Image (tube, rainbow, N blue to C red; front, side):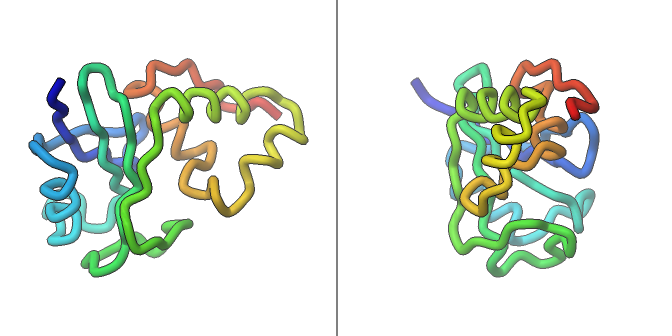
Length: 132
């Protein structure tokens, strides 16, 4: 089955989706070259085989106007399965301090609670505002 790639803007709540690309490379190139309507926004890439099946946190290398508050800087797009993000969102909501502490590890820093919350529509989540 073929996939479609769309850009997800997490600077909006909930996230906005736009663009349609045939490959992840095309979406990555669009982000690197800059998107006029979203010059300093927090942008991700969604892979859709309807529904959303994977999310990529793109490289920040060579990106003009990259957000100054971006938590993560990496040199390649980091892809994560949407099912895993749903599980991680449940961990964030668990209310268990030990479980939430696990999500603070650097390997998971692309997927903090606020980013997952903004993806709730695309992931089909009911994310509560405060689980503490």
